[in-house]
Length: 142
Image (tube, rainbow, N blue to C red; front, side):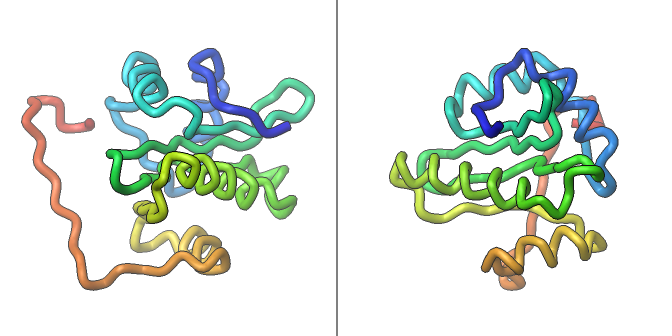
């Protein structure tokens, strides 16, 4: 069953993300911060449940101009069933309802499996841009 992510899903979602290869979790992924993110981006993040357990999850949001797909994962036992594609489609459809036509995501350069998954769904790599980050906090892992 695909449904909107709730903060009550946090523990199961974090366990899923934490057990997913090449998934980068940071201090900013605290329950408090995820709750704020979900509240600022209602109806854009989703989970898939099987028998009451979260087996897939995606965090997504928008800045009002572009969509941002983050932290997509499906547990290993449920891969190959199209759940990842369903989660991505749910995000794209929900963003489209808000008038957002373009969505970005970040994939680790060495995560070839994820790159292949997104390319199979007609996402494309952007080589003309480079990501820069700035951290105004003393916390290095945010």
